Length: 376
Image (tube, rainbow, N blue to C red; front, side, top):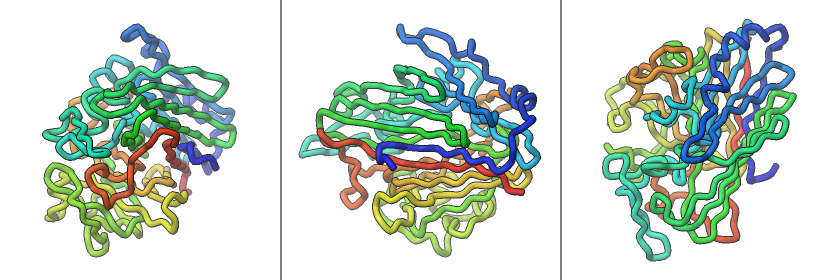
């Protein structure tokens, strides 16, 4: 399998036959709501749909996922990713719904790092730190786009010095929806100067359907015996801590809400779960299970596999109902969760963490597979 590919495989264990009417009712996103020109660049909505009625919608603003329609155990279709029904709402989005995040996903301490004895200063958009690329990260860029059949290709050149990062970075991201219900996402990146890079996707999930209550009754399994503790600014302390005997032990799977309110320093620091788990792997870059998410009333489930060394589980701790989604319902506290496959936060300032350095002549590599299923 090509190392340059991030793939999302959508495997549905129930038939979507006869669901066309439900699918159309669930799909509230209209093409004209995204058809606009911003900064002299065209913004559009792209719809991928296979003969099984699986539907994925994307936009080139932030190369992001807008909606994914899947069935529950009764065959009823619902949109299980959080998002907005028009581009104007995304322009004001405060919580990174569905987008690519980078050049460096997650946080960099004190908004600076040293590379080859040179200090690089970044924009401080998260207290004294930088988060998800800075003031105008990749999520706020209008990507070039082309579509051929059930493939959409997004591309962007991040110029040297953008948000403080060195090097002209050429990034390509493609989505392909297959007839066997697979959505393949491919990321390529190359640079002309030594730099750091850590790209991820910030889709929020609610397997009941976007805008439908909280995710605290979802079950999650995370294939990790260790995680990286954080200080009260969400910066890793450098410790690699065992999950055993703590609220961070998801190795056997449990409800998200079962221990989230315990009196625990790390839960206090993160205001819930907002941590990086160190994935169990036999080999550093192997494709392996990262997490499994399921919800019993609908029967929907997701399995995530990745070649990355870590995954960030964020339990929607800063959602407060200030924005409303495609269904018109406000996104209240913990009404969605993110599972971001990644290198570790603040790696450029932690030499013992897996390196995020990218040099000229090398290619950025990242692979993730998410399998969507339905439990009977």
